[in-house]
Image (cartoon, rainbow, N blue to C red):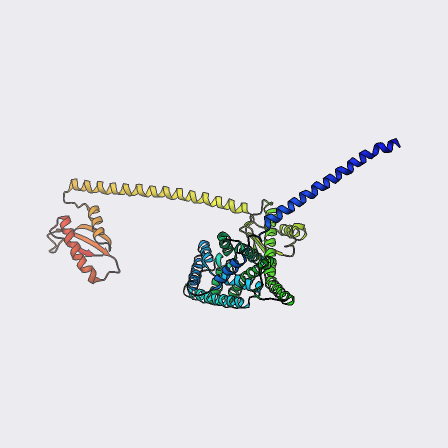
Length: 490
């Protein structure tokens, strides 16, 4: 009995401690719950009437709004043409397309048929005008090539759906808040990018590429539907008053229609995303294969990046060195059996090696040829120097001969100088000669006659040579200081 009495107080203390811990945990959870509710609860900031009026005011499409849309269209088209992201963003910010889309979502949530019809008509008019204006622009100012700003809007996927949906949620929360949060509105306009897809669709019509048109219009439809859907959900969550009473069956039908439309739009985008994700995973595994299997072998000299053909399931590699059959078998075995390459294990490797035996042979041959070329250059340089020396020697000898002749006979002509001057004056002279010829007419008296022998270019006619010979004879007589000079044509 004494032992039991001693144990009871200990047991009771442990029980009390456990209960205290439970109470503290409960209080902590309640405090956290209260904090989170206060943090994320935005119903108190909602201004129902102001929100509805603001959205209805933006639905209208006439006057200034129409001109703003036209200007935004041309700004976006110019941005796409110039591949300028900054210009495209500017077109997103000034575009008034967001108003009718929010109007569709709001009227669907509030059962406001008149607003729904007005929003739908205005949105359709805006779309038609945007397509027509962008068609005209790109018809007269076509792109030189399809750039990144354009190609980024012809293949939407599930990520574009999520951007439109969460962007629409952010926009509607900002719209319902008391006071306009301009930065949120501008941010959503940039993120959802309503204007560029319409310009891209107009470009597709202008060049007759209907795949571009369909892809861009699909992206615009995704943005439109999911922004409207986000508007519908936020207004339902915040309990906006119905414009007209709708019974339970009607509200359920609206929800069913919204769900079906959302799923129908998402399905193609999901498949596009899966295809893009699969292609990205394939390229990642190819890069890993190159880094882990090819670049680890020092003898391999890969040229450029591998060429991927998804339709034929082929990967083409080009090597600067020769790749043996055994090395190809090793690469194929790694591709087929390594668990790190599950996405590309069914692909075929197409390997093209160099026609030479090895990279070393090419390098050696290149070095040898460079040495031979340098040696040839040295020989040519030596021969050129010898030719120059010989020319200087000949010129010196000619001058010496002429000087010796002058010292002996003052009437001797400096023939080398005159020959050079004659060639400069008459470039068609092929050869010139000068001599003093002994001549006798009566076979008793002997005269010394100076004679110049000329050989002209054979392509010249006599009608051209004759006047030139007269000029040349006159000039030579003056230079040679002769009273008489005979000219002979060779």
